[in-house]
Length: 236
Ligand code: OAD
Image 1 (cartoon, rainbow, N blue to C red):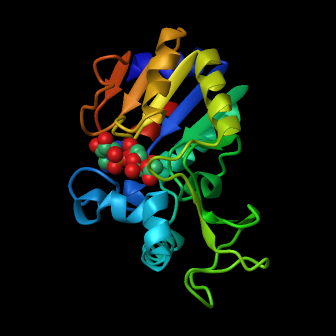
Image 2 (image 1 turned 135 degrees about the vertical axis):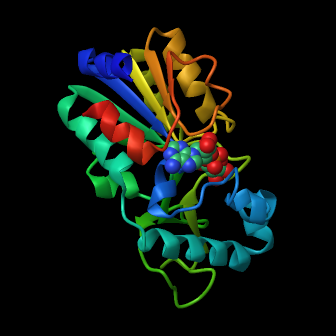
């Protein structure tokens, strides 16, 4: 822990990568592991463009359920610790796979949402994206002003990540002197490639996770524990 704290104190360029585990203590279920969403639901029925084409109502109902969970949740000490780290670091980038917006609510500013944002809707017809925080729509699937079908503004399996966001994430990793990876199983690509990229470009990589992941053997320091407990200590 002390070594990792020194690396963060000594670095002027830091990148953090977060996954579902950082929001676990806010009461939002992760995808994998016990209680994970992919234990109960099949991703191919809910999180692919084919699933949406087949049954947009079912997919939206699942997203409405998740929107409700997220709307009722609050950021936790892990989210706040990363916002604090950003405030004291000259160049800080937060790359998150989470779509829940809890980092925004905790005060993080320079956020790259590589898997999109659950509060954004995008029209399949005109392509327009907008912020829409409603928990219910007059019809399901909801419609755009142009009459087209709206979809959640998230990245589904088989889809490309937004190229500009992805390129910025890669750049942040290459430039970073230190990296914090918190709450991700590191099995979903391309996001899982970011920590190895930062490491090979010379960053000190610190992992925060109660369990070992495929990254654990590669990182400079593996801190086993919950993000809401470890991150505040790490940045104190
Ligand atoms: P996962 O659900 O795959 O992994 C969650 C990780 O968080 C696991 O490694 C847990 O050990 C860890 N974890 C659990 N509780 C924690 C806590 N309190 N503090 C810290 N870590 C904790 O979530 P992601 O890695 O984010 O993609 O999943 C990546 C992507 O797979 C998601 O963005 C989503 C999903 O399918 C799409 O939907 C495209």
